Image (cartoon, rainbow, N blue to C red; front, side, top):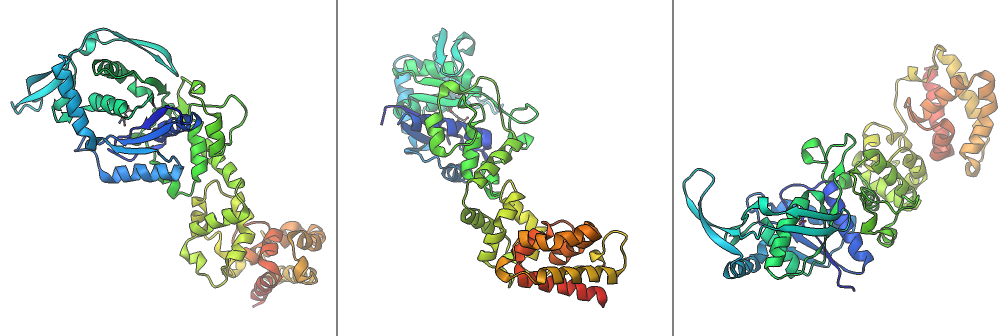
Amino acid sequence: MTNIVTRFAPSPTGLLHGGNYRTAVFSYLFARKQGGKFIVRIEDTDRERSKKEYEENILESLAWLGLEYDEFHRQSELVANHTKALEYLIAEGNAYISKEEAKDGSGVIREIVRFKNPNKRVMFNDIIRGPIEIDTTDLGDFVIAKNIHEPLFHLAVVVDDATMGVTHIVRGEDHIANTPRQILLHEALGYPIPNYAHLPLVVDEKRAKLSKRRGAQPLTYYRDRGYLPEAILNFLALVGWNPGTEQEIFTKEELVQAFTLERVQKSPGFFNLEKLDWVNKEHIKRLSVEEQCAHIERALPASITTLPGYSHEKLLRITPLLVEHITHFGQITEMAEAGEIAYFFEDPTFPVEQLLWKDERDPVVASEKLQKILTLIGGIDDALFTPETIKASVWDYATEVGRGSVLWPMRYALSGREKSPDPFQLAGILGREATMRRIENAQQRLLS
Ligand code: GLU
């Protein structure tokens, strides 16, 4: 292990969205690449707004993404350190207690702690943005604690970062303005100044900053919709970073190897949902059929998995077909609810007129066509009953009398749906017995 230490320091005051987790991803990848330490620190000193459920959601999300941490802290449990630092600053003449009237108009006088601003220019060399120089004079003697036992944000962050030996602060660029204040505090407390890497903004398709108010979803939303964690990790890593090569699909290990803060861009990173779907699909394709099937099985509602004709083995056979139609596994649930899956496992029910092709309204004619199909495919052996052999036996006849008028009733008899896979694929999956039975039933119904 090197002495490199990064941290992710979220405030548990709401459900964090993908843009927030992008910060965790970069911080994590940098630490792992460097063989350093990744710390998670929950910044819960705002007691009114911090909630346990948000903290739990953060930890669940990090675990799901696979961002394991080496240390965990809760800022509210570290207040004794903050108080000590405040006392030290006051003793050294770098902070003072100021009796001031509360801003709420109550007239109450409180003893807040202000930092004695040396009023100077602060310079730091941001790893991503280069040298940044800010004059702190305008900041005045800023408040660092509500009282000696209630530190405010800047003081708590600085004391915690120094105590935890954080060497690299990787965080959103909205914190650039906070950095001079924090550097002044580091200096006054005699701490080393950490390295800073301020990440570019994350924006949506309309180039607006990603925010909950504008509909950005919490990360667990994507988990619950059946996105793969390795795909989300891959996608988030590409929001504001690229490896400088054509490669876009990465495993976690490949990301760790490829990641550098130097290649993080200055311009905003796009949180593009179409790209997310593409990346997710690419990761789905890389799973084995067994793994894909397991995901599909989890997404299927009980109304499907409890059908008498349902079996894992059958699902495995239709898995490649289902995978073609989705970008994330939540769509399997939607397909099932829309009736697009049940017919694989049970004979469909539908109004008989649906079997009639366009203006061919004579049921006897349609029945004859189904009868002919039965004859043609009836001769195929069980073991040879594949989409290819079925197609080979029906195709010439269908071409001769009109494809629609043959393939439409065939497909409808098999699926009972206007939209479904082509009849050959469907028949191959259903197998000889179910295919014959369904076509026979339809043919009989046309005659009754
Ligand atoms: N707790 C701060 C936030 O959630 C982050 C502090 C930091 O990264 O320095 O915005």
